[in-house]
Length: 191
Image (cartoon, rainbow, N blue to C red; front, top):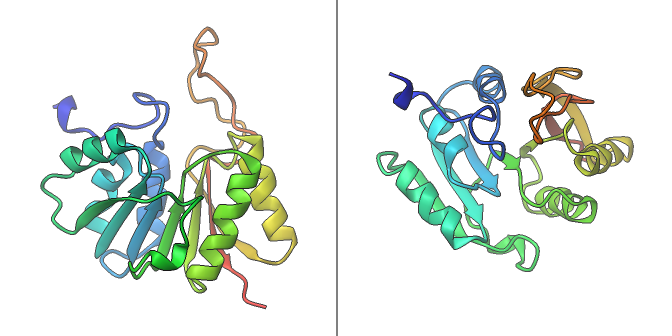
């Protein structure tokens, strides 16, 4: 029954690949961590990973995405969604006890740097997952700078691999080849 299969990048360009989700499940032991998703979109990643985490909170500023996320996760009682503007609100207002933070919000360089700094200040020991690391130059650059500055250390590459093409169809406007892994799991590097 294909209707029960999770939606991934091959169906919805703006979500993550199934490999990305599988690698998260393999990296984190089940039912031991809480996950905060910054930029939850339609809650598709939450739907796929909900059973693996003890608590899951998705943040987004777009009300239409939050509505879709809530519908997509109607039967996941421990998954919550909240309207939150991560760029104009103090992250200390986030009371959720995140062990893992998945960053997938605005993919512009300055915003990603802000996401990293806010995350490190609010969740000092959190493990941070970056989506679109090898698909967007801005994400790649901001994350690599944080690594070079000693703020982060790489734990594992996840998702589609460097050089892997998302769609084989060259005429597809969303077709691209990853110049780095789709995602990256990092640990904060306290100084």
